[in-house]
Amino acid sequence: MKLSSLVFLGCVLSLTTSNVSLAARDNNPCDANGELKGWAKKQYDPSVCAPVTSNSAPTVQITAPGDQAEFADGQLIGFHAAATDVEDGDLSASVIWTSSLDGSIAANTTLSPGNHIITASVSDSGNLSATDSVSVTVSAPPATNTAPTVSIDSPLSGTTVEEGTALLLKGFADDAEDGDLSNSITWYSSVDGAIGNFTTLSVGDHLITATVTDSNGASSSDTINLSVFESTAPQTYSLAVTWSAPEQRADGSQLAAQELAGYRINWNNDTNGESGSLLVQDGTATSYQIDNLNAGSYRLSLNTIDINGLVSSNSTDMVVELN
Image 1 (cartoon, rainbow, N blue to C red):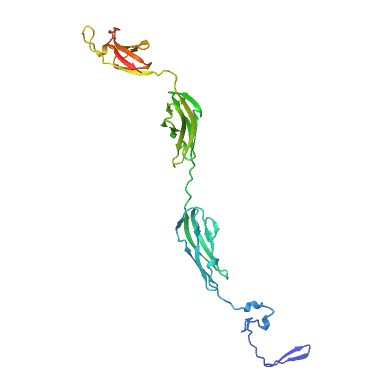
Image 2: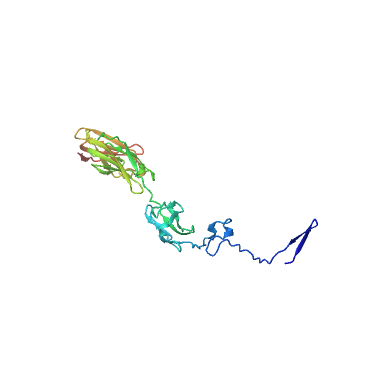
């Protein structure tokens, strides 16, 4: 080294340096044994010398159910997946399951109806994770059907009527799905069988049943008791009288059809002495029904009336027995 001289205030200070070997310092705080070097112990935590290890992410694959699988509403579904990790080994038991519709789910569960994305997730001890997904569909539950309701409005239960009385049966029927079904009510008598809603019933005690069935086959019924007693009124009869239009007058001249104004039917009941006549004001008529005749032996005759009011003599009597 060279000798340097510094002069201060007339004094001479001599500084002599000897041969010195200088080397650059290694900045790695850790020695070959993985421990802090002396100079680094006050500046670094010992953990900086811990060996650095690599971590591989795990893998996971859903094995069941398959993608696009379909299930019925309420069906129990088992979810299975295989998960492995280079460092941690088999992680299948650590798989977490989620549904896009139902959120977190168990490995064996039922799902709500709809299209679900099912995701299997797994994480290793180094906090690396992996996922796999499949799509499954759960069908909607079958539509429920409510049975209809029906009630008989008239006649009231316990009604008693005379034989021959015409009855109007009325009821109301309703269904949650189909609406008003009153026009679909069917009627049944325990005595007379199937009946209409306007009917006469035979003598006896009847159980009247009103039944209605909806579009899904569900049905309901209502019943009443009704009695029909034998009529005390005398039985009456109806008699149909037919004839042919005359073509000649009494003098033998022709009688045109357009000259006919009508007919008169005469009857006598030889059994009880009743008699009467009916005017048929239709020149084209060839028949007429007489109603409400009592039993007996009847003699009937016919008169023809022309448009001028001329009346023929009585026809030959016809005898009829009504009993």
